[in-house]
Image (tube, rainbow, N blue to C red; front, top):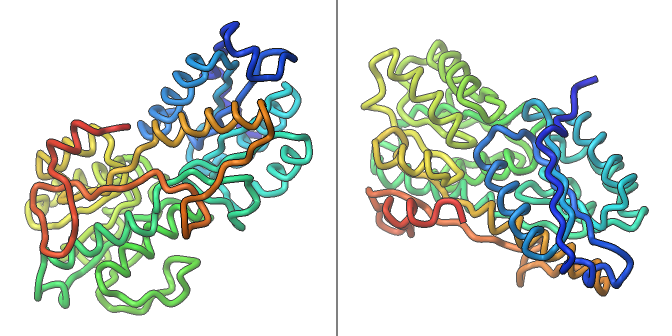
Length: 340
């Protein structure tokens, strides 16, 4: 069984939080992320911890050893139930397999909010606070196509995805990118079944730099003339860039990504990444903690954004090479806003 990384767990409490629990003790909340090394999840933890401290709540954070460590997340849910927590914020590694443990938590009276990664089905959680991940992918796809212009018809595209279990966040970004680029998707609920000859192949990265480098190397073996690279996130993009640089191809390949963390936006400034879609994980997590506090006080459930089945925490395309018809913000604005 894989080790649950509870060593990063944080306990924060203040006497001002007692009122939130209706006079029956301090409200407790849990954050469960895929890993504790990805900067995106580090920022989530910072945002949740800061908001919990502000509200006088106890707070615990858990993470798996690697992206895809489903067993560790199940153990963490059980720990949160046993601890008497009022709610769980969850970025699921396996968005389908986690549904049963989540159901046990909800039956035990906990509010469960999916952060960034919707569960499958999405209503398996009480609420979802997330980037519109399809839109994040669509923006970088549309930007890449517009930047290439007529040459988009001759593109050779490498798809660097997350993992084989195809969590919803990875599917949405992948399918959004292809849609934005103008490629027909066969089944929008999964990636890898497309027939467009411009797609050289899909490889998984586990969302980290080493995985991105290996995935890029594998796809370059299939076609050394790849000139567009979609990446699930910026650590994977950094790895892909290193593989391309080793072949002397770093200056003639267009890399796009999603996250908008400060290192990733700096990579846009440095020309490593052409454009990235910026998310706001600190906002996601802090809003989630506020929702747990409100639920503990009076049972109020979070409401989705109008016309959506989740609460949209926003996304912006970051680039210093704007393309006609694709809204974007500058690298400087991206640096000013990373990560909110």
